Length: 427
Image (tube, rainbow, N blue to C red; front, top):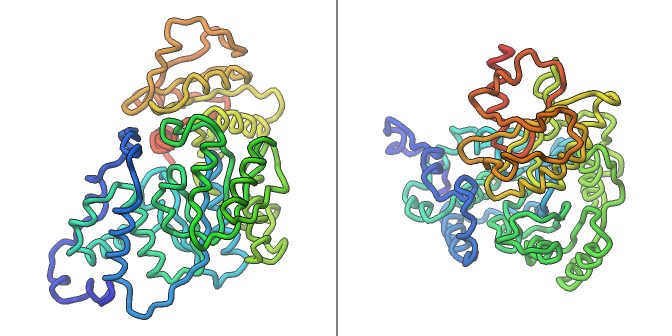
């Protein structure tokens, strides 16, 4: 019996209140929140594979021939925006395409991670699906937060009968839950040093983990431009695994969104999934990814970007500066989670002419202890090189503001910033 019929059975309709998927999800182990990634040291995909297969076998209608074209997106920086553009370009190139997109992390709600035709799954839909799995709650309870969302994405995309699925990996690739998508093609974005305690301490080892998302169906790998040495490693490792390799052909140094759009377009054109130049950046008839160089307020200018490692922070600052008139003074608010390279981020900030730097502190964030009590050598214009800020004084920071403000460092800051802007400017 398929899950929709199970939902509509009389005994289910009689229930006064449908179970909440989000409530169940919040009880699962969530390293994204705790930042305890040590649990992955002995992790493998065996249990998740078994649970996914069991639930699929019980809930997939007999005889369903579901074979979407799947693309997995792995890398350190640029995964989310590249995944988004792959979905948007496919949608614009052919209105009959049905595209499922799975991304992480989220800005406000975990439901953002699972979308169909650029629309996030509705809470009611997750509750219905959760209700249909009532007899399997014990199995679901064994999953992590990320695994559970990944499983729901598999089931939801199948229900929508997608002909394309785009899967952004959460961490790494070889042992990421999205590996079970068994992608037809792999997209490798910029590689940097992040999650080194899990993925390795050098770029080659990290790249190998990412490429490890390859499945039996995988035939092609597309990569951003990397250093010459890393490109050689990527080519050799990919060819060893039987993958044909293509490298990015166009880059726009001061506009990473434009670069990622053109890379996604190059991928789909090379795969013959869209006609050449069917979709163009200049037309701007597509949705930009939320939270990426997003202007949340125009007067004063307040821009958010989730860059959270030194390489990404540098790129974000370059893009932001390029968007401003020359010599425009601006401020920068940055927060950093405990497992991120805050010292490396600070070194990057020192290379830019920032008027004031506001360092975010609060629950779940670093406290910037290495800076306190120090006279830091930097090119910052203000004598007071940095100020500590947080949720309690964010509205004050926005009040009477004239200079542009860039906010970055963590996805978690988006909700705080959005709420403060609404309160301050009564949007």
